Amino acid sequence: MTATTAALFDLPQTPREPVSPAPGAHLRPGWLTADQQTWLVHQYRTWAAGPVPARAPSIRGHRMSVRSLCLGWHWQPYRYSRTADDVNGAAVLPLPDWLVTLGRRALTDTGHPDDLVAGYTPDAALVNFYDPGAHLGMHQDHNEPSPAPVISLSIGDTCTFRFGNTRTRTKPYTDLPLASGDLFVFGGPSRLAFHGVPRIHPGTAPAGCGLDAGRLRPGRRPAEHHTAHDRPDRPDRPDRLTPTVGRRAPAALPPAAPPVSSARPGPVEPGPGRAEAVPDRRQGFGAAAHPGPACG
Image (cartoon, one colour):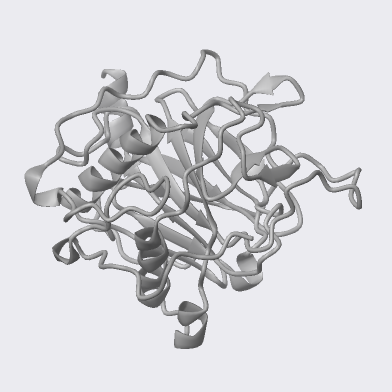
């Protein structure tokens, strides 16, 4: 049995239903259509060709095996900033309005109340690319001061997503397969739950998702009122992520493919530095009802 075949048979083969592994945590399988996934991959390639490329952050001298690209605010260990000081010093692209709208739809579809949905205005997104050998250690998303939910999408190869508790990186935790098109939201009592990705399953990306290999994970961060400086009030604050050093350097981004015509956005109406247009409503994203979030 080849490694690819083993990966295929190592995953659940039964129809997948919505799952809530803990209070405030929600998995919705197949939430994105194939056209929406392809369109998002195209956006990612556009962003990665912009002023700040995707990079593998380093924590205490250890380079992570995941490549990250930031929108709105640039994340590096211990801090957020408007400029990618650990890459090239350039200002990061703004968070597109349609990502805010997509986030609100995700909250609606996972049963969040209308007032929380209406008030959801994330100002940062962290888009991670995992090559087949990448992984991510157990960590908490505690650099973001907002208590609003974190929203995560999966495109490409299936991963094992480990969702734990709020007290420790160790058990109890639940291992969930996140496949291409899946939505995962966690907030409320699970907002600071430890979570990670111990494994990517190569060869499981479905045809038509926009990626031949690897996993793309766009995530919205409710990171309002970031400080653009280090945290002098918390000099002992631990690293945001457990160091995850891969056996090899992260792979280069997959080569760009011609965008699918049915997934192309409408006319471009960018603001300063806008990377791309708002998606066509037929793709299920729609346009934001209000301007993008204020970023200080």
